[in-house]
Image (cartoon, rainbow, N blue to C red):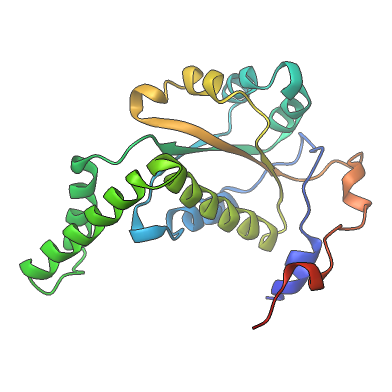
Length: 217
């Protein structure tokens, strides 16, 4: 796999061919990558809505009206869309669920190790809760790590994608009853295959000079 070539050829798709669909095998591969995405203290603060039916796509676009209307066609014409959701808080119950999962797969050599892990994770959560931006900001940062993983996985499979931040989160949260489930929508990812009319497909990739973004010490 030529990682640099994948990065060079990946771009933000502006128009999709609605007649081209992602195979179930490739979709499962992307979802597996999301399942394995890393996060700080393995907090895994996310939930992913996998949108594939036309009816569900229409529901997503309820949050893409007015100034966000230009994003609706990307969702409607995509093969699949994924709504990345982030937890609004970390409860003791959720922390216990994580440590029990760790224990179930054999990550602890004894009860003392398990207790130590639980205390360390709780300590970090308390620290981030008190930090500037709060725990919500920290958790959403983790969700965007998962987004990056999905973007690269899709590109490696020859699948086009668009990360979308232009939507009304309150509308989307209400549409899918996310708040009641303890989540909020953070970002939307469309997946599929580019349309021949996509103007962005042939434009050169624009990035700042390496001298501006790298400092070697």
